[in-house]
Length: 176
Image 1 (cartoon, rainbow, N blue to C red):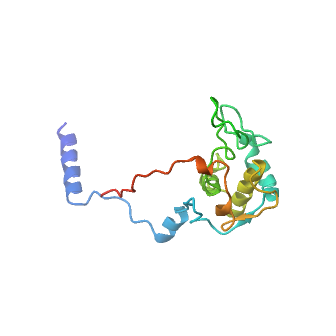
Image 2: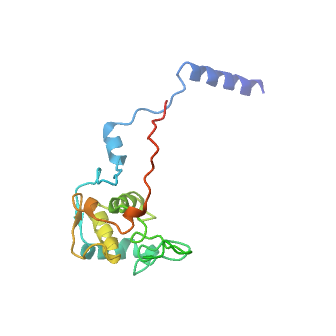
Image 3: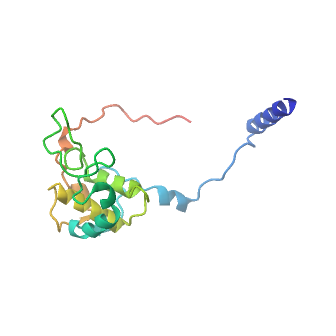
């Protein structure tokens, strides 16, 4: 018991004098590698390009297992990526990319950081743009040969974009 108390006192003393810090500052190149946030305006979108036609093979190889052949998802497991048009004001809304998402850039950001489910972050920028184009095309938002890139993607008008209420609260920075 005395030993445990002594260790706690020593640890508290080390922390009090700043000696309890572990780790090291992250190098700038490591920070840049994980700082991949894409804003709704398109800020943060990387170089690259893709079309729905080009996204078909990527989808078949990396997405179809979970989201099914026609992007309809697996009930209770993985969400549908298409459908739901006109359902949001019903008792059973279907929230998909085409019926609910307000920005095409958000689709890019989500796929880039989270997909495929078993290997998040493994897609190249071109594969991600192609998948976004495929999903947008399957929802009737863009044409099959419309190229998505950092300039064209922010210009895509999503069907439900006007149905979100902006948050009027000011951004408040945390005090540390």
